[in-house]
Length: 628
Figure 1: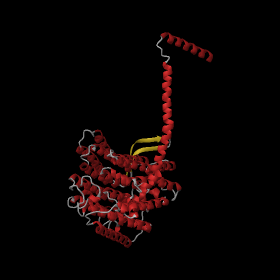
Figure 2: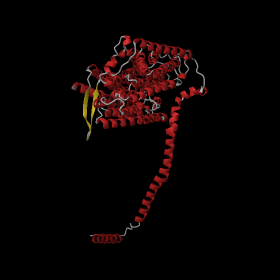
Figure 3: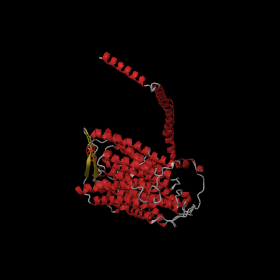
Figure 4: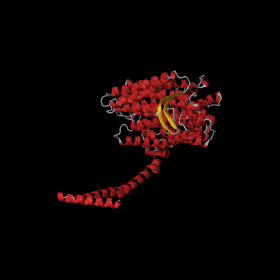
């Protein structure tokens, strides 16, 4: 037990140590030294997490660090919870994080603020670990806010660009909107249960009746927090703009850390969500709508990172759809496989950008499969995985979601299958326009260094074989991941999929055939492109509408940004120009006038001063005598 406590404390402590070393030594450390230290700290954290994972006994261990808040009936310790769910997330965060840190050594080596960058990456990792390891909602919330702060710093890392600053602020503000929901949910749960410890809340909440208004309200508020952090409608527009940060940041935010926080929160609270069927319906249809929204917008993006950003939005929608039908293990399985292939896609995009000297427009790419062979092959593996082609990992995780959704809502299933076809279209459009045809740019493409390509190869292997982690019964597997996580999330133990083997095979065959046909159709359009003509303004209205993100940003600007800016300007002109400035100016003029008047008494004549003292004493005596 003592060994478990010590190892558990080391997992977040190591990245925090990296923050201190690289942060305070940023002016003295070289780029490779800072990168090496930061990467080593996260790698050691991964090793410690792996040791804990291998020694896990299917029990929940609470690591009490210190008494934190003790006011009246409120007793909230600063404690960590080690169970199957937290261990699995720890492995994903530190494992993928290590590869991203290693890749960053090559990608960011010539940036003048590289040590600061690695300090912020380590801080991000520490915050995410605190989020998934917290034993109560409040410790989780500290990590929750920590990743929000770090995302602001990392998205706006190149802060001299005003657009990048705006993107960072946008992410910060939209996440704060969602965070209001989580704060209110915590207040409501403490009011009802008298505690915020996960074990106690789930135990007491599990004894309440299904559809209890308090549970429905609390879960809706928790889901509001999840929509902000995990970029669901309507709080999703910050995520594509987060591409302003360096590419490793995009991989870190989009693959295994920040955007999966909402998924983790719902799975951790699955007992409460199981007893709130109305909330589950909301989660399902918000997820389905988000999956479709992200897939449609991704069709017409030309920035290589923006395509992947909307892909992430869409895949997160799939995960929430799974949670909405109670398939928590399928959602977590897709979190895992998505971490593999989406990190690979972003790092592969970074390798392409590096090869082309910073170019991100796929219209100025093409023909790169010969000059960047490793990047091309690994990118192809990731594209096949996200499209759901067997036997790659994405096939198994997406099939699990589709099968579970079909069992609960055939209508939602149909939308998700259509979104899967769109996913195949925009991903292979991206692949063909980037690596096939003839080169349309002006740079001299070259393969990235080993420090960047080795992580790509590792992630490609994981993307290819990751499906074995939760192999379904129809393939001779035993759903290992579902069985492993069931000890930590009671909602997973309640899962039931009432489909025959024949139905499952039919569903898999249908989705696979449709995706393959979509890939073939995409090849006929973009496989041999040598030039890309046409003005986006000439596109039909619907295409232009989708390309402009369904004008969701414009809608928010009209409803919130512009009225708020107008109100700010007018309140400023009234409050500052007509109230604050006259008051401060008047106070200044009064002080000056009073000073001028009092200065007349400073004559320099000693007899005058003595006379004044005598008068003062007489006045004082009169007041004292008559006052008594």
